[in-house]
Image (tube, rainbow over all chains, first blue to last red; front, side, top):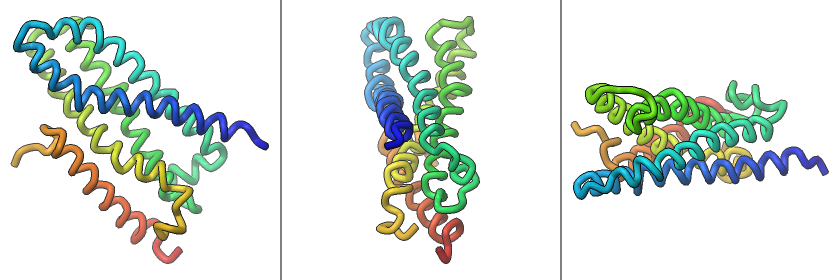
Amino acid sequence: MDWMPAIARWIHFLAGITWIGLLYYFNFVQMAALKDAAADGTAAGISKHVAPRALLWFRWSAVVTWLAGAALLGANISDAFLLRNGYEAIGLGAWLGTIMLFNVWVLIWPNQQKILGMVPADDTAKAKARRVAMLASRTNVMLSIPMLFFMANGLSHRAVLGF
Amino acid sequence: MKNPLESVAGTIISGVILTVVLVVFLKNFLVAGV
């Protein structure tokens, strides 16, 4: 047995659950909780102690997920990204995941650093950062829905789905 | 029109619609005739 795909798939799942689980936590729990917490003056507990830790796991699990996915595709990675030779569906999943990784590191994380005071920013810059980070995060939730469909079915359910 | 990404429900509905669009795109343009 070739252990590499099995190990890569295992790590891909573990890291992917961590990444998307935290993405859903941010969008379904923390955003609403922060609004309520700001109203009663307890938001610092979340923004100081919870958000930085969650973001650490979030951004690095995204990297591990992508690398394990690339390892899993192996020599077929070019077929996947070029959407050809039977790798069209999993390739769409790979593209969606790659766009999401870009959003994490280029849009969400730099703006969260401003919001959380890790890098200097005035109130105007913080307000803009909050808006960009929120929309990028929501975009990733939206993209995660087709991404998971194509990841789950892209290779194993081709015959059933007709592709 | 309100941005659907402003709400969790709008985001999820957008994701489901995007899934359907991509499946149709895949079946009709990427693997048509396979």
